[in-house]
Image 1 (tube, rainbow, N blue to C red):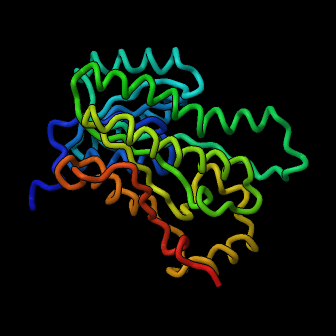
Image 2 (cartoon, rainbow, N blue to C red; image 1 turned 120 degrees about the vertical axis):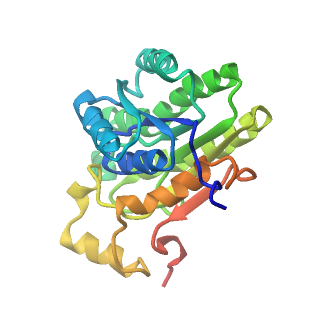
Length: 256
């Protein structure tokens, strides 16, 4: 049991690893022995996460890439391969949101959210999963979904649609990559205050969320680490693929 969650010798690529949730999950992977590449648009933020990981005794390096640009992802993949020789874990944690009412929504905003939350994950997997297969590496891809992916939430129409699409992508790729020894799963977080949802967390909405969350509180980013490490471990979750794992305080089980 003491080696069940040991990621020593593994390399993880954390796309969006400079975000609130992404950085916490990346730290969890590092704490369990993985070498971590922090990838994000903002290199300064990525370097801050690297310093935090190094302060905990881990090994990490920052790389700049934008999930809406395949060229930048390919450049980052090449640089990471030179740094680590390859990777075994891909964590997809970028995300953007908006509370624009449906009839006010223009297609530029729709495209922006879809490009980051859905198209960006597809392109990232095209680049990094292909490299994993070429490297002969079996491993784990972990996508970050949302409770709005299964029961659409008010005020976040495009976000909900993008995350529902992400669930489908996760299950399709689980079937596609199983023959290559690559597992693909998604974590469905409940409500964790982060950059993309703080602007819509009014007092009224927070009360509504709490009324729908049996544990009656927000999640702490570090509470996503357990599911992340479990899905990353080829020992602990070796027969788990195509699965959507809820970490939501009971939100998904609540009706009336």
